[in-house]
Image (tube, rainbow, N blue to C red; front, side, top):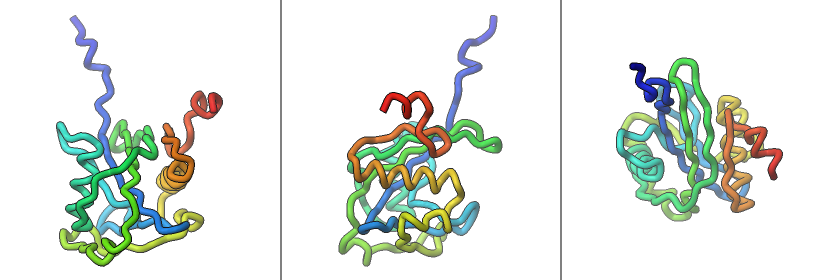
Length: 159
């Protein structure tokens, strides 16, 4: 007898933090992969996306920040990694905490404030779309469901 669960998706889950200062967003440069990104990373088994975001901020930037609200969920499968579900959370303003940023774990080598209009100069296209949409959601207060960084067709038609 076939196991119906054998065809269920087992996506990787990742969570990132959006920090905004006016029309700029905080980007970090990784020492591996596609290099520029927002702070965050993959969830561990049994870890919620919000908890993963908070843990990653502690590990990457030495900041203890609780995610305030969800901005986007993006279904973005990757041929090499399979199904992926990516969350971006509003983690508030940095303010005085900016001086406390420490890149001590070796995973990052730099951080920078980048105007939203220029994130495409730093990020791969689907991440550019995701971050831009997260910035839009921050302004509207309405979380977005995305596929590959774009609003899903059925969801976009309903708005």
